[in-house]
Length: 191
Image (cartoon, rainbow, N blue to C red; front, side, top):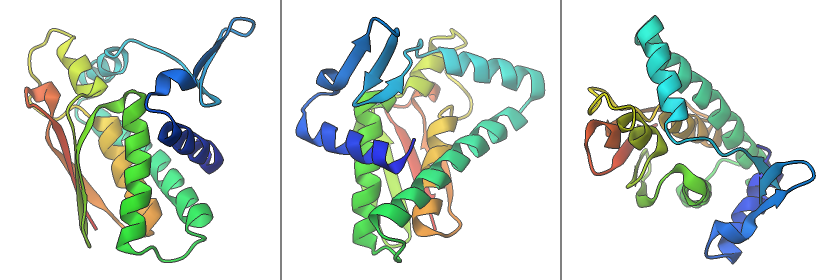
């Protein structure tokens, strides 16, 4: 997604209490858009099912592949925000907090989960959400609670976004996951 799309989405979400007014369906093309961005609805357990099957076939490397891909997308988005919205300048912690909060709040408003904790400090961040299509979708597969965190896309994207925004190496982990039976999915990020 391009920064202009993000900016338009963030602005539209800030003006509206609900993303429902931003969702449009074009019967002629059979496309659905959210604030002008094409979206595709799928079952919340579709991607967790694909990931679980992939993990069953190739083992733990599946997790690394998905996190790595999501991280690449996050890095790209973080760099775009840094270059266009922060004009390439070294961001202050306040700018990092504001840019990342807007980004993650927007993602959560359109289905990534309800943001319940968002804290950014000088060298770390902690983000929690009380719903998660990745974690809840995994539970819908009927395999019982997972033994490891399941929010691979969210973790990779968050790590990558902070890497791109800060222009430095970032590490992170999901410390709690709804897919494991926790009440929240919590991500701890350090740089």
